[in-house]
Image (cartoon, rainbow, N blue to C red):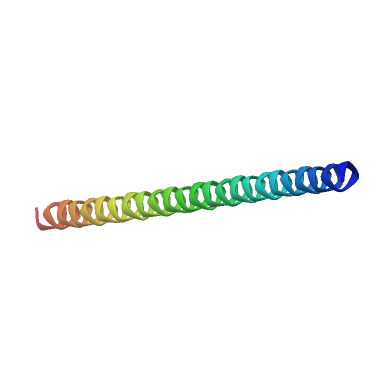
Length: 85
């Protein structure tokens, strides 16, 4: 009688231990998924920042081109005025 009761108690204890381990593994998997999600989000943010920097560089290049065009027009106008006089 007592032996069966002790065996049932040991089995219940083993089941509680298995449940605890399953819960710990699930929590670990969840932490890993969250870590990966945060890493993907950081990578997306880095890519967005790189794209913003590329756009700023394109804008600077457009500005340099515009200024170069204005200088060339001014220089042409100045040369034309000098040749007329």
